[in-house]
Image (cartoon, rainbow over all chains, first blue to last red; front, side):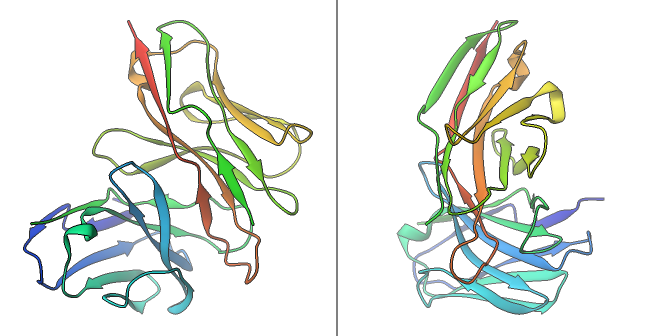
Length: 114
Length: 116
C-alpha cells in the first residue's frame, strides 16, 4: 500500500482554469504538507495542516487554497491557473510537526499550464 | 532563521569510489537534520536523519552521514558508489523558528552522477 498518494500524477491545463490535486496518507500521521518544486528543483513549503488545522501558510497567492476534510487528506485547489504555476507539487506527512520524525512524500503531481 | 546550503550543484564520481555530498546548516538551537533522495520523476525518499547521539548516522542503501557541530556540517557519504545511486540529493533541517511550525527547510539539491 502506498503511504502517501497523490492524484493525478500529471495535469496539463490551460491558463485561467481551476484544478485540484488530492492527497491521502494511510500512515496515521497528524501533520500533512504541500511543497512546490520549481523548474530548478528547489523545494519550498506552501502549506501545512496539523489535525485539520492550518499551521503554515507561506507566501502563496490566494488562488491556492488547501482543504483538509480529515487528518488523512489534504487537497490543494488552484483557481485561475497561470503559466508560473507550472511545477511539481508534493504532498507529505509526518507523525508530528515538532520533533525528530521524518516526513514521507508522495510521488508528486506535475502541473503544466499552457 | 534556519537555513541549509548544499554548495555543489553536481558531484561526479566513478563507480566503486567513495562519494561525499556536502551540506552545511544554520540553526538557532540543536538541529534535526535529514537527507532525502529523489530519483527522476519520483517523490522524495528518506535516507537518514541526525537527532542526537552518535555523530555518524547510518541510513538506507549503504549511505551514512557525519554530523559535525563545530563546522555546522552534515555531509552524506558512501564508501563505494553505484551507478544506481545517481539521483538528486537534498539535505534538510527542521524549522524551530517563530511559531515552531516544524516544517522542513531544504537545501538546493545536489545531483550525483555515478559513472561506470
